[in-house]
Structure formats: C-alpha cells, structure tokens
Length: 121
Image (cartoon, rainbow, N blue to C red; front, side, top):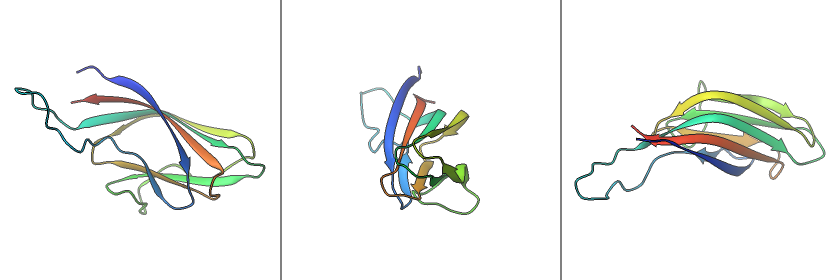
C-alpha cells in the first residue's frame, strides 16, 4: 500500500510526553478488507529553541509513553542554543507499538517538528 508523507509539530514539555505513535484505535472498516496497524518512518526531526537561553532536550523510543534507560533515541540531554535549532536526519521505523517521547529543560521553550512517512504493511 502507498505511504504518505506528513508533518507533525509539537511543543515539548518538561515532563516526558508522547509525541508520535502510529497506532489506530479502531481497525473496523470496509467489508471484505482486513486493516493492519500502520507504521511510521521518521525521516527528519528538528528541535527549535524559541527562547533567549540554551535549553536541553532528550527523546526516547519505547513500548510506553515514558522514558526508560536504554531507549534513548536522539539529543540525549543535548543543549539547544538560544534562538536556534538542531536537526536529526535518518530513517527510524516506528511500529504501532512504539512511542516516540521527549522532554525539555524548559516548559515552553522548545518545539519539535517531525517529518514522517506513514503506511500500512
């Protein structure tokens, strides 16, 4: 099945927050079609710091909407300079059971911009 590109923008809070999860809550649909859970492929992550001081951030990928040791993904406690941004490029596949979570050192300082491709297996 064809995949589609989409973008997600999200503020990053000081507590660990679920930012991306591709699960669909209901797979009921057309008669004669068996739907499967989608998968997402993260292609680009940009973290934007919109304040006047440096702020740290971290991201995790795991089986829950939390953070656990060993599930660090990107920007592990990395300091994002004031009024600047940091980018991650790659290809990270997220199944419907994966949660991409993040947290920041300042409550409303950082915004995450995700570029993803989503499709069904």
